[in-house]
Image 1 (cartoon, rainbow, N blue to C red):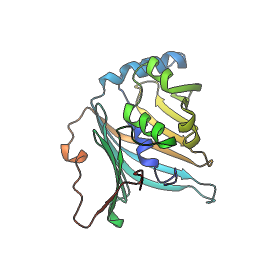
Image 2: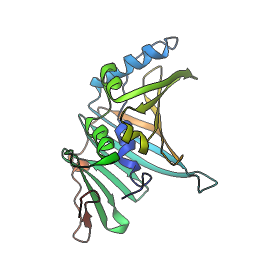
Image 3: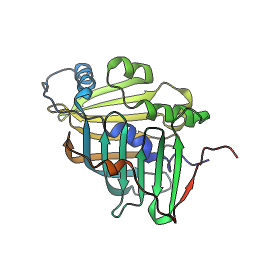
Image 4: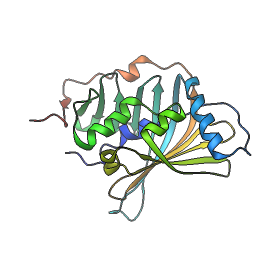
Length: 231
């Protein structure tokens, strides 16, 4: 079984496309901000941004920082790249998630058809459903543990309601600007105490995206494996 740390890219992308551009008063209460932010998700058709990824691991004294880029197309497609040239690429397609390691000539396929079991099943279910676009959907999938506004940013802390999903990923933090609702950062906490923070910048909302981003071609020398498939 893969470790939670290795499977981070798809989980990060579960949240990376939650962005909208509309105005709201800085003096508004966090609860109202959150509801308005969720309601505005229907205005997002495509989104792309540069990112800085900061990983904090208990086995390292200093955080590990990487740079990358993310693309999203509604309702549920995304592409995530880390490194330049990319060392990890995650692509969400209608029926599967591909995680590609170009330097290793390896690709891993994770089906989004409910066939996974255990913690993977519930975690992939969150990915398949996408990020909630209403307060009702949010309440169904996550427990809101705290929220607050500091220096023009609203930060919400979410906990997956599924017990098995929580065993892999106990907590998610999402921060967005209160003036234009631009996504600022996501931070994921894993069961081993490690965290991954993703800070977004230079974002483009509703721009045209090349369809090829979501249909990567695997070379003849690339080995395709199914980590969740039972022998």
